Length: 382
Image (cartoon, rainbow, N blue to C red; front, side, top):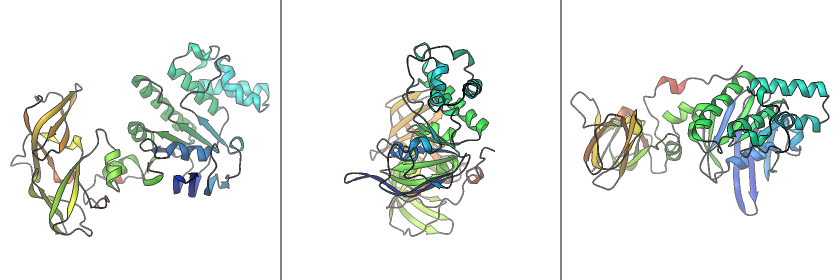
């Protein structure tokens, strides 16, 4: 296996810059996920690593070897596509073995590698079937098996679960995670699904408009987003944002107030360049909001209330969206037994320790109290 390093990598189509001076290092054995909204450049970045697109400028290295001018077949990579790309007239065995046969590998080597891949992916019983006889999840396993037998230095996955239903996505996601543990391979994975990113990645790369907005461990991005874009992208449902005014600045944090929240309320973040009177954005995740007004036992409790416009009951939990007097929508994730109905008035509360503050330029103020788990070093495969 090998590391992957991108230095000042840029890709343009005519006058349009798709990838803009990306600098990134993926260590040997890491599982790295590229995530971001549609059109952010994540698939293009993966295709640059694969050699399916050529960089306009910059350097790309795999295993310390510069590969800018190296063809895809000689880069030591194997790619798993969203569309499976299986030959319908070949059996599973023949599909998995196709690349080895094309390369002229000895018959006994082909047999050994195909059987080994089938054992890893628990698909020995499928080897004699044709793709039309397989489920979507089984077809994706065949595509992964075809990558495994090549024994690549780097595995590349381009939204491999997008065509699967919800249950199959969960099962196949678990299989890919186990595959990474078993092989200890370097894997680069593209998805628009942040749940996949959070559950699979050692390291997440968040992209927007062809630029890297933040690189970090999943819980690091969740608890310590660098800017408002990352904060709004990581987490489902997305973080709530409310406009507030700075009322105080000291060593303990920043005081804020607004017509919807009242105040002043202390938020334990580093003030940086903030000044009293500045308009900033307060962020609070739905899962950190409770139903009910702040009580006398809730130190630092912040209250907001409004009219319920949406209730989504999932059984063990309920999503509630209220609209405040100023017209701001606030989503809360409350208990599944919470009694609430549309058009009712509902008070909500949350704690200042769970809040984020973002300056006018969208950059996050450093939180002074962050869970230790968010600071833990990643555990890479051996």
